[in-house]
Image (cartoon, rainbow, N blue to C red; front, top):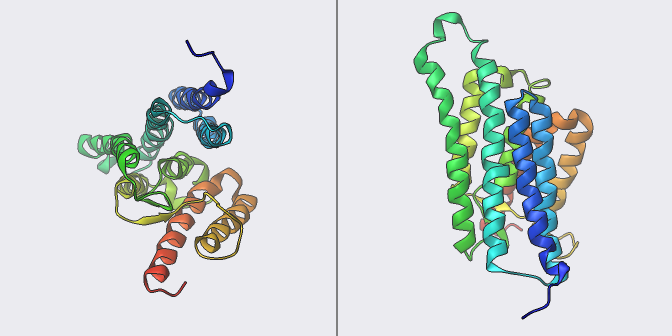
Length: 243
């Protein structure tokens, strides 16, 4: 019988903490505290980063760990941000003209549940796809969660994010991006040389820091939108062999 080694269980423990934080986010949304719900998604993202890092540092890998990570991500980066957007849409719905407040328009809110469904599809594809080692294909679920989860916070700076139709459009659009063939930059540095994809990575980090200093928590949707644009621009230039 193999000896119990606590270090072998550290990555999976961190993964479970990711899931638990996702549950706390959902609970916060149900209680109407959307800012706290979004913050819990950030904490989940930290644990999601740390579980992979700890697995590499401790040289501990397992098939169970990979599957557990995806199951946790469905909760934290699929269901949790969906609950935030769903609750925010119910607020935005009350601001549209009374004549437009019909049962049909109200039922459109349920389209946000494309987010957890397509998040699950993306995570399942990622687990079996060998072409996503250098970059991602489709919007990563944590990035999508940060965009959607912080829409209420960003609405303090961007007025159109109070608009029911605009918010619903972004929810559906970013859900589709999860399973799109768009190449997205991976932020995993192998070195810090200012060449190749590292140029895009440093630019994303620089833009992200500037936006966060200006808009605080409301910056996350802007940062993720910038991440999308930079990724598209970088891969377009790469395909043209400019870089």
